[in-house]
Image 1: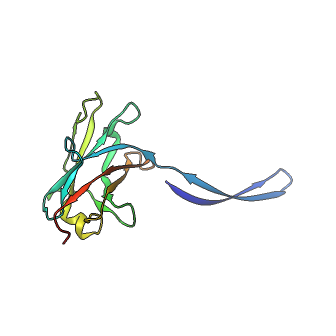
Image 2: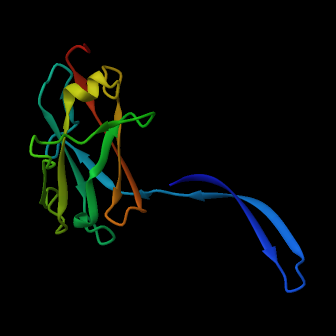
Image 3: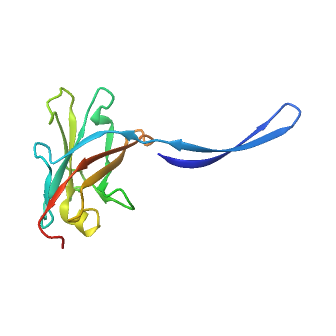
Amino acid sequence: AGTYSVELTVTDKDDGEGTDDLVLTVPHATVGINIKPLEDPNPVSLRGNGTMPVAILGSIDLDVNDINPATLSLGDGSGADTPIEQKRSGDFPAYVEDVDGDGFMDLVTMFSVRNMVDNGDLSALSIELVLRGFLMDGCTNIQGTDTVRPVGRDS
């Protein structure tokens, strides 16, 4: 996903050339996410040292098994967001479950609250967070947003 400047050049059979410039915008694939599934309006303690679950909601258009967990990040959407939590073994704490009861499997991932606060992605002023990542094809960029309600003091 992104906006790119592209220059196209064509050559005909007589070696005549034509050139043109264009701006190509490649959108991300929008996915539904649910921060802290089963809790609403998603309270997040800013003093927490634990992890915050984020469910990426599967649908008829999205098989969550196609998501590459290693590419996931969560944050305020500007700059480098906080990457998914990683276990000491190198694995990512993620599991598949139908958290919203719609019949489609969802991918539940974990993000460190402390890392998000330290990275500037989560503060007392935060009202929504943006999840970004890629599918296993390495090309399809996904993005989703959900609201949060910070509680406690920012440190």
